[in-house]
Length: 121
Figure 1 (spheres, rainbow, N blue to C red):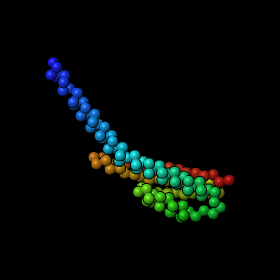
Figure 2: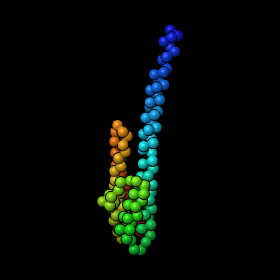
Figure 3: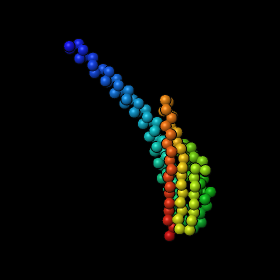
Figure 4: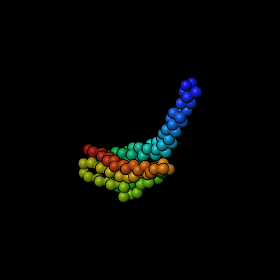
């Protein structure tokens, strides 16, 4: 009986090590991308807030700064993914884009649909 009990824990340890390694692999692939997307969304929100305080707004300038930031963060973003509406009382921007993360055995697709609004006084 002692002989059978001695090797029982090895399989469990190997399984847990594989699960932990897979978790670390997924985290290394996804966390930097997620942080970059959050940074881009914060930047876009700041651009909308800044544009709301300006008397004259150049929409192309806003588009270009956000696209430049996305390129810097290595996030695939096109001008078509941005929709900017400037109205008398507010500025509204919608940012819709997709990020694909390759996990070697699976492609994880994140769809983002964010809205940013600044009320003008």
